[in-house]
Image 1: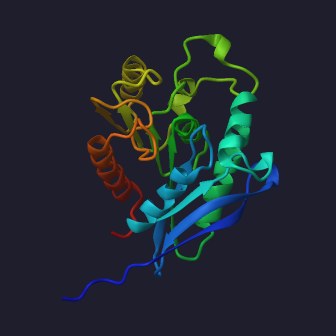
Image 2: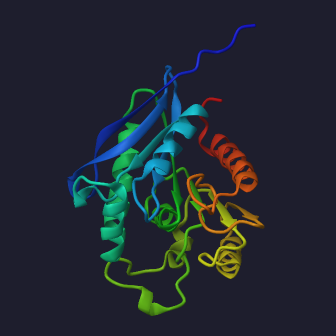
Length: 253
């Protein structure tokens, strides 16, 4: 029996982010002529850690170009946990900076000779919120995947500030691409109520979306290095994510 040759390349690359700043990103791709679709992975608040770097490799296995920009690279080198702690203590990074960094990562992927020109964004936790924001702010996102993004809805205005001046839900009318959402029903942020309200607005505005919710799962249930990991729900969720990407941005199986 003949089996197709499979291989991938994973490495740290340099990309041009917000204001032209040069940062690092973790990039994985299938080895082959392509063309391949791209996915920009927006990391969670803990930062550019080991699990986040597994995501581009998983996507490369399924035929995509996966790039995870280091959104905290301006903090300098060091242990990702320490850097993440410093950024959290400072109230996170500005939304405009994240949007600029994601736009730069998208440009990096689209410029590759083996890219098909389509790029999705996918984010976890705070990165899920950023995904919703980016999908509403950037005109050239082909698909978006929000994995349990908290604070898409902000009920307390005191949570808004110079770094996060608007709740992403307020920008939903500008959403131009299909949106995929995946949530745990035991998650307090986003709570089931927030997910319900987000879905209601998407439906009201006639947006293309697909939401999946899981019982017995809370926040971060894809991350297999955390106590919150739920194998059954994560396995099913990943299958749905990959199917969504193949449907909306193509790629090779």
